[in-house]
Structure formats: C-alpha cells, structure tokens
Length: 205
Figure: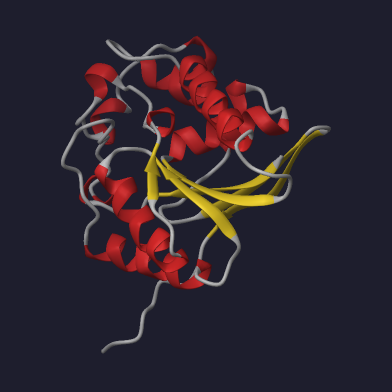
C-alpha cells in the first residue's frame, strides 16, 4: 500500500481570526502561511514523495505548490480532499458558533450532527477515506505520497484508520502546516506521526 503524509494548509486570515472558512473561494494563505509552505517544501525537498495531492481550495493549492516544486512534481487537485461542507455555518465567527446548541454536538457527539445546509461528519469521513483508498491503490507498497487538506478532514481520516470512534475525533489536534503520517497496509493501518510541526523561522535575505 503506501505511507500517506497528511499536510494541513498553512495559516490564512480565517485561521488567524478564528473564522470558519469552509469551502469559500478566495481564501488565500497570509504572509505567515506562505512562510510555512516554503518551510515545508524545504524540509521535504530531499524526501521520496512520489505524488502531491491537494484539496482544490486555494489555501491548500498554495501550500502544496512549493512542496511539489521542490520535489519536481505537479500538484494534483482531488475533490475528495476538500473541506467539510459546513453549510450555513460557513464564513461565521467561531465565537458566535460556540453559543449555538449544535456546538455541543460538534465537540461532544459529532456522529449526531449534520451542519445546517451542509454534510455530516460521517459523510465527510467516508468521502476522504474513499479518496485516500483510491489514491493509495495507485501506488506501490511503501510509496510515500502527500495529501494537503484541512484540519477536520485529516482528523476524520486518522480516526477512521486507527479505529477511533468518530465521537472522539475532536480529541485529535491538527495545526496549520503540520504533518501527520499514516501507514496503510493490506493487514492494517498505523499512525506514524501526529501533528508534527517544523520550525517556521526562515533566515532573512
């Protein structure tokens, strides 16, 4: 099968301001986010990554592009890696969303939640895991592939592959520009690294 590097996109203004970007178009990396992407590219430049896949949203493509460039590869957009469909919650401030009754379900019993006008966590989990299974099937055993996606999507994938109940997936934490590594084999899956962060301090030029 393969080793999958799940990479969360870098920082953007929505992350910085604690706002739910969801699938909104035009959400780009901010200055720090671009530095994070360049740092990731520098660290992964000497790796044996065979392919770089990405959510089609701008913040993920902008994170994936420097990585792919450093490896001599092209970014392959994959709709299955896109963010959860938050429906009417999209573009809302987390401070306001935390006051809603549904927020308790989001954090405590996410298996019972469907976002108003959006999808459920079960649907999002099924989507990303089906996508990962399809991508892994394209590669040789022990190939290393990178998938740039979003916090909740990465947490949902990790929970599924390590057998963590979906109601506990919020206990995982995925930081911007972090790397989480999973081995997906014919006899099972294994978590190699969770939420690994590089130092993002780049030398001044």
